[in-house]
Length: 171
Image (cartoon, rainbow, N blue to C red; front, side, top):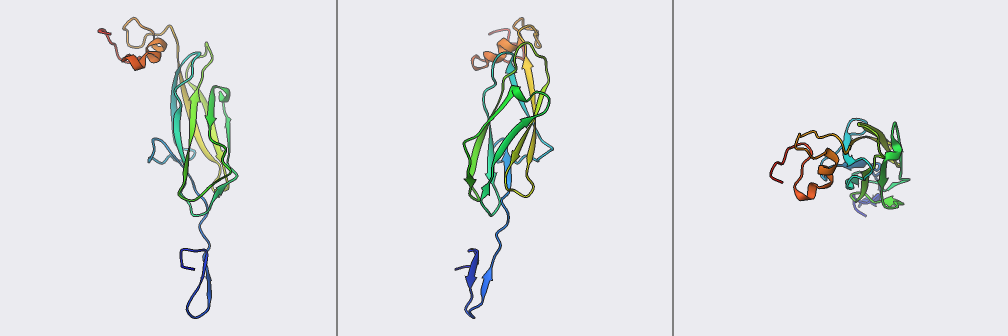
């Protein structure tokens, strides 16, 4: 073996055992930007009665050992208005990653802001990883930018160039 293995035998016959470090669950959004457990918050935006586009979080094992015992839980004030969809994860080798899709689906009529906490559990010694979710539900009455088109409609027509926060008199 070599020093990178969990053990190796040296030239003098002695055996050296290396204890790999623990698994470390790192959550990134956007990819490459590491979030802090219990500190960072993820904003999600949706029209009342509609779902937000899925927001992709990267879950990475940045430790040395295999990440196992993965579980997710949503709780807090409005947990039923959020969803976290991840592939079934039995184990995640060191250095590997998967994505988790977050969506926000406010029923109508509600009101903003909406909130929940996503708890990601695993065999990481600092588990769980806690992430606050902040949902903004846009309604079909309010016109924030004053262009005579309501916020929710403008959000739903974003692909056509509409922006619920900026007037578009030429659209």
